[in-house]
Image (cartoon, rainbow, N blue to C red):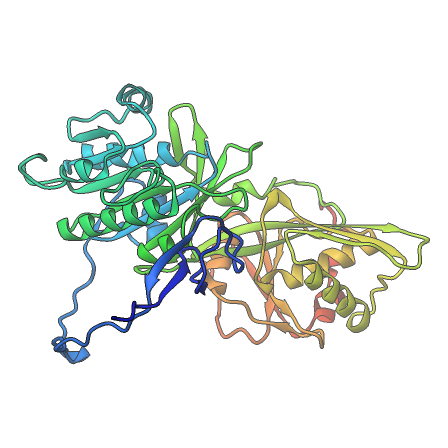
Length: 461
């Protein structure tokens, strides 16, 4: 009697393997994600043809502009032909609005677009397209959950002459792939639907954008394999009290993941925000103790950041330290450096730090601004309102260089700032083209900044 091949069960979400079927994965905690896989050794083939890497012809990826500059910049220059983009975000954040605008702009430029909607009827999509002003004869709409039938319109004869130039699938959790059991949205269906969309887009050499839902934990719903199958993963986020939306790339095979796209939700759709620094700076004329300016980088975009610090005397033996926008451990470290290396006493005060506008700064370029802001709050003396501080502060109190100083200084000058403090170790020499150019002061350590007249009350500030 022939021995049966052993069977193992593999979790589609995290890859955990076991010999017994179970409902809940003991590794990632997901339910109903196990699939039976034969563990028999695969048959050895005859071997495929291999090539030397240096002999393979390489050409830059061809791209299709989405018609929205902010989206193209986050993608690295546009949608890559044959590439697949997955965009996720909270319900109602504007994913469908953004992609319908993209479809209308691309179609208006002469490229046929296939918009597959598995969640809305044709009348609903048409109503939103009319409100957004993106109605076009080359914007093709398919409403239904049969993904195979929808993708058959990618190429002639069913599609338009010349074929479709862009595929938008809204959403991958709402369509059904043939040959798979389960309802749309189950792990098997999501994986099969995504694979079918990826294969079809690459076979037709058209870019595809898939919409993905997220869970209550903030991660994309479905198997983790979904994020590995696509070329780019974008997150579309925003706060309920704000009309602004942030677009970031979590994964990008054809560009970097440091870029930030900012949009504003309006009655007629999403509009790109050109002056992003205005979101985080109130341009106050009067100097206030504890307020210092710095220039942060979001990818290649410089943003002015307003560092606010408040010092309140306390009688308790353990003063409170609170920060928002800066890691708390970093804030506590800089407090110790300021007290030990610059002689500014911090004990006996509750210290509160905030980056205005809800901006988060993960890189250490704001260290100098934080230390100067702390000293200003503790001494109750305002800083100059036309000065920014750019530098990382070490444990020895030294001021270290920051990345992309030229871009930061250009943004500071554009916003009307007149003076900048940077590290003396910076090799970049800034030369202003404007008559009333910005003055760049190079300092060795934190004490050099505090000894200057920055913390003295200045007339007019």
